[in-house]
Length: 243
Image: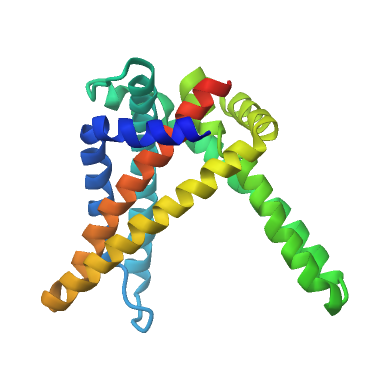
């Protein structure tokens, strides 16, 4: 577990090319959101609402495409100590549909289980609802750990949607505490990175107040790219050692 986290920091330095790709996507997505999504108090026409929905779906598809290329890049980086962006587009095409399938199926599982648990909670006496709410939170944490690994299984072992989910869940059950431990440590790392980015954002926003929204979008996009690469390297390395 700790070895995978250490490797994530070591190899992240060698993943600068990937960082540029992920950061660029994040920056573009954030800037588009700043320019297209209105403030909560503003009204949005039906036409603009449709445009925003279509744009959001398009950006989500691009993000999944980049995720496929990124995970393949990280896999090669861990296995060989170096990786090339040349096959990035081909890998993105190769895995995009299956990654979409894994994502949608996991979302469906969460929605169904969540709906059932909330429905059951609503039937309970008020005195028991707080306890049930805590149990629901615990249940979603457990489910979250079970579903961390399917994407890594899919890309590394070239599996189908169902097979990737099965293998990911099996590994999640087998190495539950280690996967949870990696997540907890990386959450703290992400928190530190986010706080540092927020402080920098605040300082620059005071200096360049008219550009505050754009500064925030860019800095937080870069921070998200750093976090994503560290997290994906750590979990991919753990999968390769445990599968």
